[in-house]
Image (cartoon, rainbow, N blue to C red):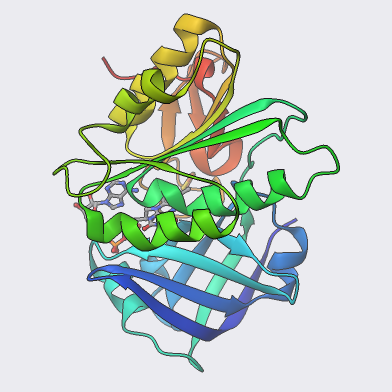
Length: 263
Ligand SMILES: Cc1cc2nc3c(=O)[nH]c(=O)nc-3n(C[C@H](O)[C@H](O)[C@H](O)COP(=O)(O)OP(=O)(O)OC[C@H]3O[C@@H](n4cnc5c(N)ncnc54)[C@H](O)[C@@H]3O)c2cc1C
Ligand code: FES
């Protein structure tokens, strides 16, 4: 069950010129959250509800705090980036269906851009399992080094060694993230968890489908309500009788094979 809360910002970090991380005191959400779920956030508890925006739960702390990691795009994210510790945000969550964790396998996490955000929570959940995976390969990509350097370092601090790609070649492989898959995954079967821009996820889904590897994708659509009331987040799937699923309720995480990818 999700709920609507006011959460105090306990910490604000600037990761790069336009990427920020907020730590929120939200014990009700932290208690229930699962990796891959999201929250609807708005800057100011009583301000314009039209400025609610969806963000993955980036990390969950044992002391009842959660984190969101976001990039400034427009008005909603600009307002959030202007907030300071001590101020309050309106938050609804945890929402949606998260990742389904499999045990004792070879795992690959693939994150592009802000799609990296939910992979922190997922990686920590995988690492603390009673039976952790045999191997976790982490593949991360971004436009440029500045967007990736600190996040990659934080994966290193978890004991993981991410392989990196940047569009402009300033860090790691110069090129697109899907190009990393054949370079770093051997012929064995992997369980792949992926979040990022749709073309990237479509390419990863296709790579996995060709090898019959299970792949879960976390979709990022536009969302007005986040609670299945506006129909704004429909995606075409192979599983629903009317052909469409709601990302906010049926997702954001889906089996990659259930999605009808744009060609
Ligand atoms: C389930 C889910 C989880 C998300 N998690 C994160 C996260 O962890 N970190 C993060 O930075 N972002 C995340 N997003 C995307 C985030 O919600 C948008 O960046 C945000 O809503 C933009 O709001 P804005 O008011 O700043 O921009 P707007 O003024 O609403 O839009 C500015 C521009 O960005 C484009 N845009 C807005 N939303 C998206 C989107 N989802 N995908 C592509 N383009 C978009 C618009 O078309 C427009 O051109 C997530 C989205 C979903 C659906
Ligand atoms: S965002 Fe309104 S129905 Fe999904």
